[in-house]
Length: 190
Image (cartoon, rainbow, N blue to C red; front, side, top):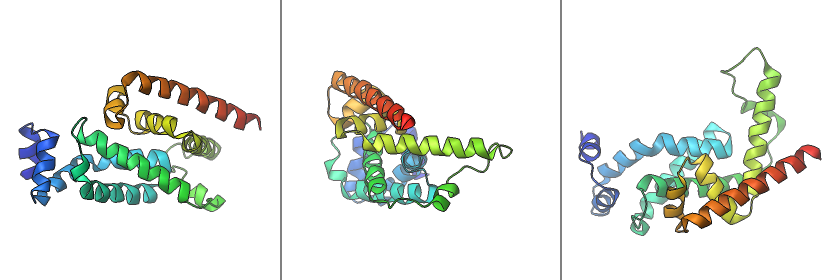
């Protein structure tokens, strides 16, 4: 009932944040229910492991709850949460030890195309290579590329959530993708 009341009334994100800051924890549960699938998807795209994605998404909500006072309201609450989750996922990826072959095999999606395990393995390896290449991009490019493609934010949302001018975001996305392409080609040749 609380969830539909906040959602259906079109209450803006600042009002939701203010309600939580005033002590209404049920409203934050509404935010978690509304955004948990999105944050999980973002984290999964970066990390490639469902268990890691669940942990990082949950950790991101805890960080967001503790940091609500810093929400400026320039962009959407969803975009702000996505930025937190993206940063946490890349931190987790950087801290994660090199996975063993057995662990990597566990990330291969077994629900699709069971008849072609080689295709599954190649797709999984390609996804892993892209995640690692994005993680290796220099900071301004890594953040905007991840928010745009892993977080599925529009260029305008990326600009608002990062506080960067839209033309800077466009430039960083283009340069980041160029760099990513170069790195992926160089890795494929090596």
